[in-house]
Length: 159
Image (cartoon, rainbow, N blue to C red; front, side, top):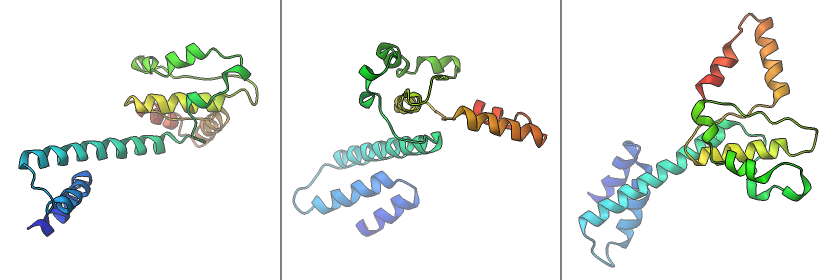
């Protein structure tokens, strides 16, 4: 019966439970556990596994060019306001479906900050999509030339 549990859990796409079940079954000879405790551990393992998989998926579909965090930004070498970006990292601007556009010269940290803010917002359970403005404008121009105006905008609104 125990040998049938793990494939059944995987068939149901309960991968976190399957991994935890393997561990729990490995411990079984050493100490007997209460069935409720087993179930609690399996449910918690599944919850954590789904959270991790969701986070990884959201990071992948955001299409960040690099992976950066706010704590690695060199605030002293930039004239941007750290407090403003830490407030933005809370993600409140997304509740009104506002976009964030960073403007500045080459090497000022726009990509680093945009990526770090995006990652922070994803960690708060919201969806993000990163665009380089030059690439976005090029795609919009290409759509317009192909008579597909609005396709990229609709995709943006789905995020």
